[in-house]
Image (cartoon, rainbow, N blue to C red):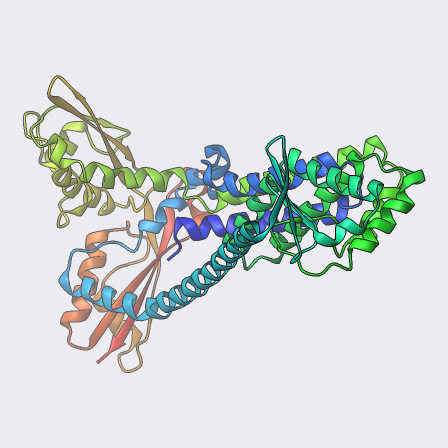
Length: 490
């Protein structure tokens, strides 16, 4: 039910929470403002990008332990080729998954409504700024920076535009100079780009409160950077603080802009008089490393292991039949087979050198035929973990077919249990199943057992759970496979 986007959304959200926690606990009160800005920007970017990158295969394999064969058990609700079994399985699947489908659709609808709401809010803010610019008076243009006068909002800057509140004309020359320097530094350091980046992040992750916290913090860091750039020291901090307080009475503000003063005045004044942090405290920025490591591990954990990805290669081959329909098979190579010889496997495959290549037909003969394909050959003789992966090489209008086999370990039947029987004694059900403990796992017998139950006229819906005892497969030995038949009596 999960899509690639929802998995990415989950991984990135977890990483953002870790990023915000580390910033709050370790970095928020440091005076390395440029470092803080880099942490907030690059950290957020890493949270968004790392889940998209391929996870290290060694870590994925370690987490899923593919060597034990357990990974491939996702294919184990066997695709038995009987009409009655397939029909029953389909009915059960629809009934059990219906509520999950509606839940996912509901969550997706709520998420998209939140995204739409945030996009509309952003567009409205941009539209108000555009309208304000049209209605403001242009008072100066220098170095590609336009200065406007307006009476709607406190003094602020946005990209290469400075909007002065008309009340600033009441300030003295020093105060006016500080305001102009302040807003120009915002523009030169391109702080508006940071704001837009975080606005986009809040659209995608509108449900995550940590994004709003980080967005607020980067705006605060912008103000610290500008205050620091103005070289406000203890001798001038009092007058600068009074200027901040004086302008705080101006009302109104857009979330996209940098105003000279805002509601965080106390923190800014505190930072003006705070001693510089010890350079050794820069080591705290290394906290980003375990965050990224955790994100990589999380990406690996939620990524299908290599074996599952390889299984899908067969599907890709199947879709390319139109491109290879005119090619003749020049060579068939089997790799990894120990139970049967290459000649025996080629005979079961039913495809020989010189035949036209058809990827759909190859797939059918490997795993989808009616109990006479290569997979059934193995699975009827104990190899429940068996899989076959075909690859092709085209040269000189011919195609070489290479089929790599992973036979895996043999399995023997452990316990055979029955659930759902109330009228028919368990032993009678087991007699119809006719599968004994310690005999080799046999797909054909499992199918036949389900037919026997259906043809007895006493049972309707029948499902089977194939449950390997993983511990018994350790050290490459034959292991035990438990069978559980879930039946519905008529």
